[in-house]
Length: 365
Image 1 (cartoon, rainbow, N blue to C red):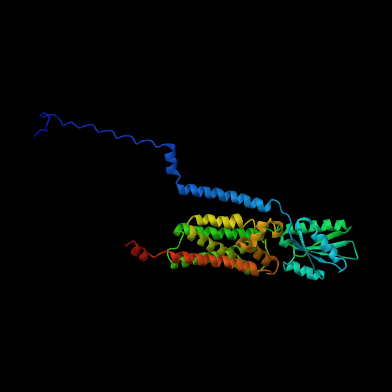
Image 2 (image 1 turned 45 degrees about the vertical axis):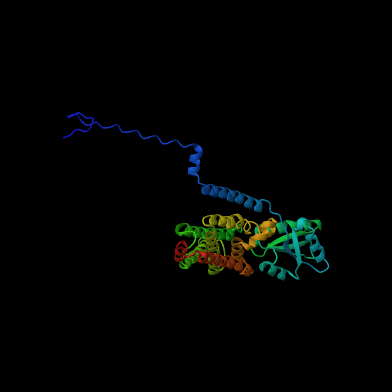
């Protein structure tokens, strides 16, 4: 054997000592922070903070100080004294009352049941005691406000008033909030299932077939959610009266309207669309829905927007079915249908605008 150059015969070959690898330079805190929190994550965190603050502002702002505004009260009285009572009601400060007249107690009662007025004062000229007709089913707070206002007016005229509830609440709906919380549950299910579908399979469907499948899945879920909610509030808890299938159908429409619009928002804004949905349906929709306080007792902004959101429309529709034989259903149903159709239209428009795989290849080529 020949020895390597510089190595004597018979001497074991020596191994060069391994060079120690140079230690990686330590990153500073700022660099670590940049690596841990991306700009996108930072923007999302800021967005969540703004949503949280908006939630607090909306709920406290809408519900902390209920004051009546144009609370509709009908006056039933002989022609010679009716103007005095109408004027007395409308003289309550801050336009608290919107007074109208009714020819008799039966007509006034029908107006209450048709949700045209909140209460009615029936004046008895042969006595010093009058009757105030209210509907606690339309909102106990509205009934209490009407009682307080009328009692004050009657006291100034040396009269008293007896309250009669012509549309009482169900035994299992002591505070009149069951319809409101039922609709909140339906709304939550709508935007959550749409969010899950978007997160699991992409915010925007890949093509029209995928959009149809996703909307079909949402429709099936909505039917199940509507029936399930009606079973709980009627059969399990006995909280609301009214026809089962009518309530189930309204619930399905609420869930689908909220879900379809949330799906559309994800198509437009990706994951940020979920935050926009929370802004619409939680921050704005819930406190303005008229569940805790009816519209005449809410601040102007919330009073103006409530009936045009799925939350308010669903609450009005559910309450109407439960207590008022389906009166005044047209507007809430049209509102829900409009949200549903808008969600479908925007979803398909976003999918159709996306270039196909073949088109992208031609452009890139």
